[in-house]
Length: 403
Image 1 (cartoon, rainbow, N blue to C red):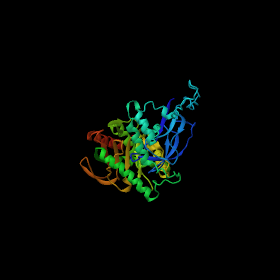
Image 2: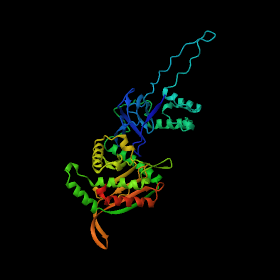
Image 3: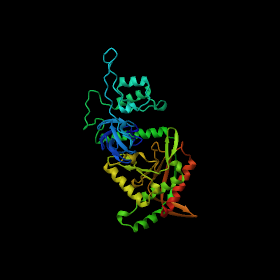
């Protein structure tokens, strides 16, 4: 029977596990791509998790209040048009030639396990000994076969997140999720671990350029004078759109490094760093930033900030970003040297616009100057392509009326 596994998503490079807070669906419900089907709690708050296939919910495997590692199967999804899973057939009593009933046979395997066409005998025996549900194990052997190492890894993950056997599960209270300052500390530890991995595993290179903002700021001021206060544009919108245009010119910086392979992406989804009120940062994505007008980008930015501050982000906000932009200019910082969010391959930083000496055409004057920086993964690009990106960024900002 055609079936898909709906798994715990990775909602950021610093996430190893999440707690299922609530299901928004039940078995038998029809779902469509993009529909919110669950709420998951991470160190950064409660995230609404979307599903990315159409179908019918066949089975909910993980129950609310359970904390499980990223990649764990949360539910099974039956494809549209496929018949429901039939109940296991009742055993038919037969008699042996001697007139005695036969020895009882082993109970049928669950539907999810029957779909696993290959499980090594050693792995099956070990799973029974360790209490590992084979339907939640991803096989690494040929054709997805489940092997001993897969079962051992699943058992280790289960031991790392499961409560002691004698301790009852209390949905209203999660001991490993502290409140207040402890929750902030937990978030900082998670972010620190992710950034440490980024610094260790990604060969960063850094470039910077100074951009004369006289022309784009004049255009923005004139444009905003034509608008109501509600419809005015922020300078950040110009920066986001210019980054999107520059990525179109240098597409290698828009994408991922996964499984030791560079994977450029066609869609330009810009993760924009937003500070949380309780401390820490999240980088929700503005999808298809290159295709949006400045007004659409402004609306998307307002919507993201509102949902970040109210704790109502969706999983696609945190999983789809192909590059990150961080703007610390409003805090007085003049230069930003960021750390790449894996598996992305680039991060663009913007500082504060400051008045600086600027020489042009043999004349020295004072101009509003913005310092833009690029942190890039040397496995995916080199300094020459990075420099071409910054040159394209500068060019697009000077043509703000065309953004």
